[in-house]
Image (cartoon, rainbow, N blue to C red; front, side, top):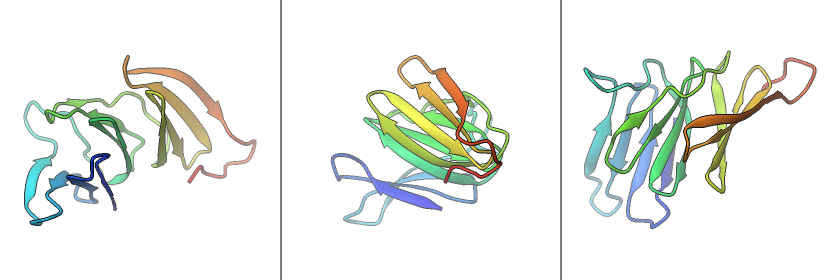
Length: 130
């Protein structure tokens, strides 16, 4: 459902409806790592809708409102918070992540502390943030 280069351009990170995050070598097409829910690994159980790369971490948003951080070692943190609907958009800035959902809510998370800093509704109507 989404993909992006790492900031150094040496890897591609992709997320999918099969609930996986994959890291690829763009020169060879080799799948370097796959992250998915398994025994001892907390991760998405429903399709991943969006993601953003923050330094050496990846932030993902899922179709059930779940939100995870994956660090450079492949360790997963999350879900941090739950939106009521799909997480449709994730943007980054200065160690903060903003996530937008179909219910029109935006959550601001400090990824260094793994805590919600702010949660607000963008509009009075039920239009989503996409």
